[in-house]
Image (cartoon, rainbow, N blue to C red; front, side, top):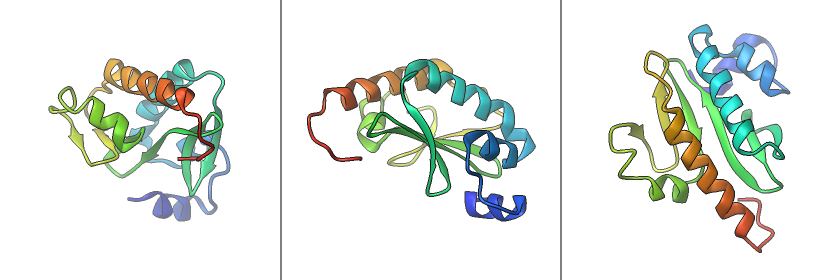
Length: 132
C-alpha cells in the first residue's frame, strides 16, 4: 500500500505526522512512532511537515523523510547519506534513496541514528539555498 492508498482509506490526506501515523497500518504504528522519536532526538530543531503526502523533517532544507507501506516502512535520508553507509546497510533492504524495514523486523535504531546524524551534519555544512 502506498501513502496515496492509505490516505484514501482514511478519507482525507493527513495534515500532521500524528495523523499520518494514525492512518498507517496498525502493525506500523510502533515502528513509526519509534522512528519519529529517534529523528526528533537527532534533529530537535527541525520542523516536521507533511509534504507530498509524506512526513518530512526540514531544517530549513530537507533532512529526511519516512513513509508507511503495507508491510514495511521507508526511511529516506538522501541517496548520498545511504551511500555513505552502504557497507553497513548490506544486510538491509534498500533502494538508491530508501532504507526499508519490515514491521516484523526490529528497527535498526543505532544505524538509522548514525545515518540521520550524518545527514544533519552534511545539511548544516552546506552553503547553498537548495531545498534538496
